[in-house]
Length: 115
Image 1 (cartoon, one colour):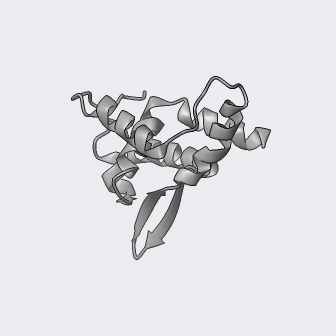
Image 2: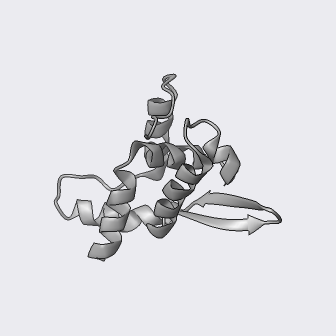
Image 3: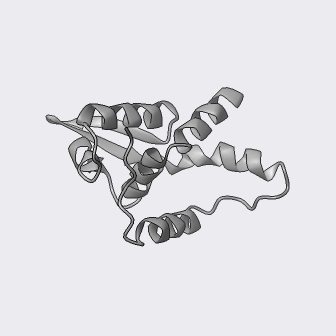
């Protein structure tokens, strides 16, 4: 479980990846649509998506010629359980988490640039 936790927390540590996760809260998205709001190459976005996939936070599948990304919210269960072990954190409520991300990103802030 430690390796899975490390992958998850490492994936969540990057603001671009957190922004991608919040975008996927709404619906599945094509890779090109995920990349659109960011000021970086498609190759750079693909690397971020690979890290999120490796951590189990998203899944990717090819539909025809288009690669789609889907949020896998169950992947946050183990980190949530781990944090609860410290007795200082409430269980992660995915609805609250979604509202938090919408508030954070809904304030007009552009997705962060990664260079």
